[in-house]
Length: 166
Image 1 (cartoon, rainbow, N blue to C red):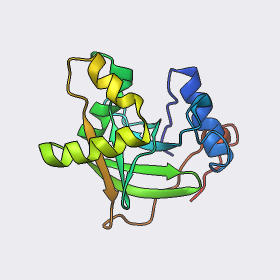
Image 2: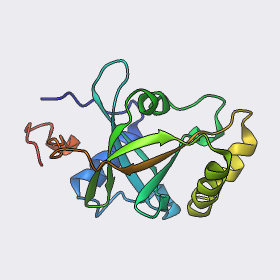
Image 3: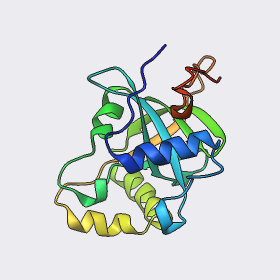
């Protein structure tokens, strides 16, 4: 069984637990903002363990835009490095779970187009970019058409009983 290491941040742990424990019926928005979030499941680059990160929901067709803003902090979030190292992810959008591959967007025109979609979905991104001297990275998560059957996903609420779901 693959090890799941919850976030050190209590609000992240709580949101992932609520979101997955309710199959996306609860916890699917960012705190009191009412704006939708997704859960990105990825592998830790150092531990190899499963990590789960709630991110703002920004969509481009059947792809998801992942913005490594960290609220405009001077450094990239740790999950950024996990995605650079291991691009295979699962994205939970309420009750739907997709096997996807991410790529960091480097083309300036594509990045601007995706950034504009992300800012429309979550306007504070624009302020975050003004707040930091780093260029906030943008990833595009696309369906992984080569993925085999999705591996069982271990949900935080089920850790106590060690039950898995497909």
